[in-house]
Length: 238
Image (cartoon, rainbow, N blue to C red):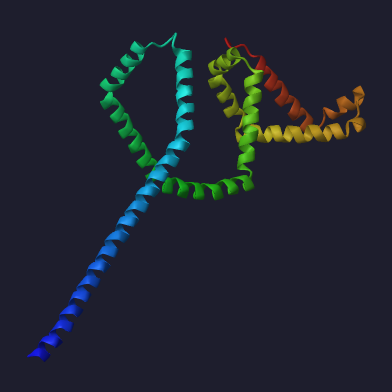
C-alpha cells in the first residue's frame, strides 16, 4: 500500500507541473497579444500624430485661403446671400439628381458607343486614304477655293440677280450642250486655230477674196453666218 502511495504522488506532481506549464503558456500567449495590441495602438497613435502634423499646415493654408477669398467677395456677397443660395440649391435637389442621372446616361452611352466609334474610325481611315490617293480630297480642296473666289468676287446683289436669271442660264447651257452645237463649236475652234497658224499665208487682196467666193464651202459658210446674224438681229416682236 505504501508503494502505491509513493507511485501516485510523483504522478500527481507531474500532472500539476503539466497544468502549470499550460497555464504559463496561455499566460504568455495573452501577454503576447496584449503586447501586440499595445504596439498596434502605439503605431496608430503615431500615425495619427504624423497625420495631424502633416495636415495642420495644409488646413491652416486652406483656412487662410478661404478667409482671403471671403474677404474679397464680402462686399458683393453677404452671409444672407450664401444662405439663400444654399436654400435654393437644397430646394432643387431633384433637379440636380435628374442632371446627374442624365450625366450617368450620357456616360453609359459614350461607353456603349466607344466600340462602334472605334470601328467606324478604323473603317473610315482606309477610305480617306483611298480618296486622297485618287485625288478626291484634292478636288474638294480646289472646289472650296473656287467657292471662296466666287464669294469674294460677287456681292449679295449679284447672287440675287443670278438666282433671278438661273432658269435662262440653264436653258442657254442646255441649248449650247446639244450635240450639234458642241460639234459646231469644236469644228469652229479647230478651224480657227488652223487659220491662225497660217495667217501669214492667207491671201488678203480683193481679187483673191473674190476668187474664194467661187468656193462652195465659202459660200455655204457665208450663208450660215448671214442666217445666224439675221436670226440674232430679229426683233422679239417680229
